[in-house]
Length: 231
Ligand SMILES: [Mg+2]
Image (cartoon, rainbow, N blue to C red; front, side, top):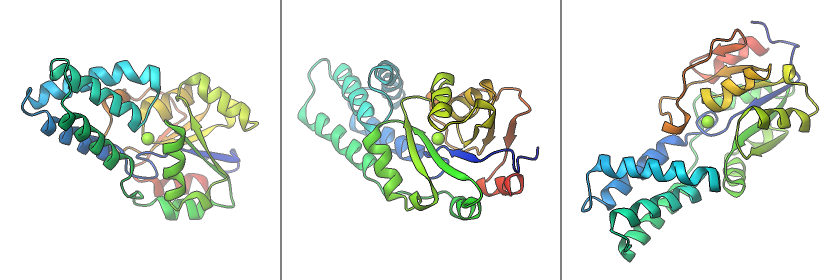
């Protein structure tokens, strides 16, 4: 598929596309299971945490603050309705470490953005907590390659239609690059856009989905492999 001259804008997912993210959440879960090791098995803690995340995400959106509420809810259940301060402050420390870790830019990202800059309007399209996502964007050192960063409340078809409207594009002009089939690929091709999948080896349980059949999906292994399609 030759994408050259067909597109003026390229949208990039951020977490696990531009920089490492999911691994830090996995590490936080391991610390959480260790914190609650006296109460139940690691699998039991994990299961309850997933369930609490499912309950809280629709209410509070994505991000580490929602994660903290989910951890506190799970801990409260496991501790029989009385949350010892050791556990509460343990959860808070896990979340603080999660929110303020160093950003690790994924291999190939900088050279890819450097090469594309000037040829397209590059835009970050991420979802989650506004403050948290903007802090990561500023800290990444990548902002100079981008026109701006959109923090979307979610990444479903309606959200992508809104994204097109905001950027004066029709859906067929939408080109999205990202690691999540559910968030970055499926809804984009469903509204008539094109998507490039840059898989990441750690996938969040809430993001798991089979790749849809669509000839407007391109799969690459590393983000730098998008360049032959675009330049
Ligand atoms: Mg992502």
